[in-house]
Length: 380
Image 1 (cartoon, rainbow, N blue to C red):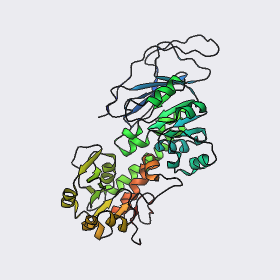
Image 2: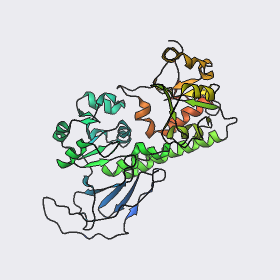
Image 3: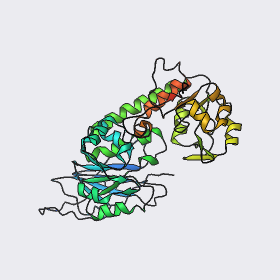
Image 4: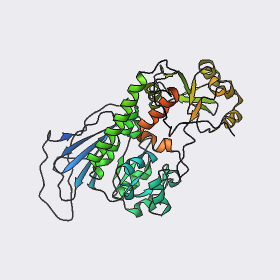
């Protein structure tokens, strides 16, 4: 679905408070940054500036976006065109998805955050403290940004999350002179692909080396854990999801979630489906196909067997329910109203993978204490 493509370099003039001699742009002089797993962006370093190309900001975007990051005393050469120019390192910014926050914290730049939509959903401890101190202002919701407050903040850049191109608030923000840069981390289809977006944030702060080191550690831990799971014996069968509005919603066979199950040495029952997103099935079909599944993971936001059975008594017919082998991410919460799984999880796939391996093959990681995935509470 997502493919690499190079954006055409076209003309843009940069004016600053003092006129400087225009530099000349020479093609093929840039150094391409090593992006291994992510498919939605690429970075090229030139002398004095960095070009970030975001190729898949949302489904069926139809076009990519090019952003130029330049240092204060540098010139953007003639012949370079972009959708936004941002002077770096940035000293203030607004991000619009909780998945952006762990990257800022990992780079030690959360203090630069000045605004966020729906701040109550921020769970990361460091940023939650900034919110509580009033250093991060509420700017409405992602669907209805308070552009007046945001423009009053005058951030150096807004990192936007969008489902399509029709977000009028971003147009207003751009018209005010504040650059908007779209982030498509949520479009990645692999665990390591999502995590590699820390490299997208790094050039805004001059932290490329730090991002490379952080990602190398995450990648190494993930690959080592996956290797251990490859040596496991029999693969247990796995069910996921739960019923919402008369449909059982569960991951497609080519999705991020399904990849975790495969890499953890288990057999996801819907692994052969081609969907990269979710499947919507009937209870009857799921019970028929997965009634005897060895494990059931991620049953939506349920935290106890009592809650699950009260929501729908048919859940009790599943073997995993009867054997108390249902595991949820909803019992791991931070300080806010959100869930750490949705905020930190995409940035730390190595932890998610180890959690699942410890569930499916506890002998492989003896003594490991799961962080995200916990058993449903049986005492309620």
